[in-house]
Image (cartoon, rainbow, N blue to C red; front, side):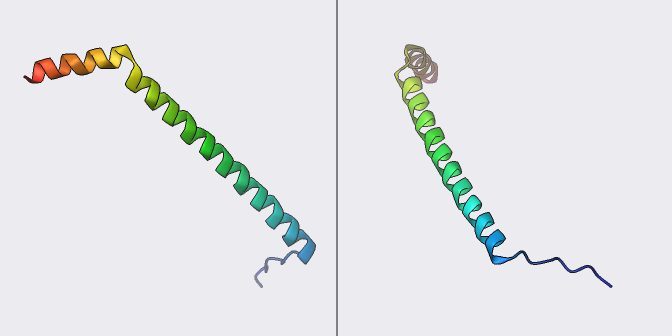
Length: 63
């Protein structure tokens, strides 16, 4: 005989689904925060004098 998995009752399923929805919302919020951080870092890198120097130097070596 094979052991069949027991299906949880409706209350347990509802609780699990609610926890999963909350977790997904937290993950989405964290991903948005990470996207914002990446955007800020990319902006800082573009504005960096070191980046401008390196770009200028690479343009000179190409010519």
